[in-house]
Image (cartoon, rainbow, N blue to C red; front, side, top):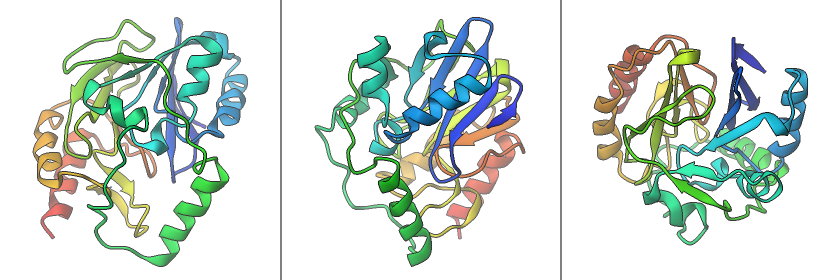
Length: 239
């Protein structure tokens, strides 16, 4: 699905994966669930591209619903995943996420999330394959020239990815615009966050980023700008 010029989403509002497209090729932000592999092929075909044009995969963190087709991309195309080293063991499935930080739960949204994840291969996650470390402030020489911002809290290695070329900030699970546990919409803290206080503090690292599009790992794209998104996340956290 096209969001804006050079900016596409695969998947659904439940679990997002994004494509940044320019004259040099394609950068993927997050690998969603394993069966997003087919959706990736379909979206590339729609824009007149192929897997041969993919130059990079950046993972905002190492949770299982973000590494879905990373191993296959590494194995079949030789493309490693860029990931902050603090989440490397998580992406290799050597660390399991604690069952904490859930917050409120509603049966309908939870069931919908679990059903969708299972249908898209979420019960058969593979370790992410070859990983390439990234650090705070690094600018990658890949399509879109993305800049990495370390925003620990949801996980130790969570990062935001600023791509000025498409006027976008990709936030993974640093925030959500559709809580998979409650169905609540709009910019809010994400569930399953390991260190909620640290995640809120990390918002200070992004609040002055100049980008219209704020793109979470779960929920619809937000076009109200980063500063307003951060304000709403903090407001929701104070309730």
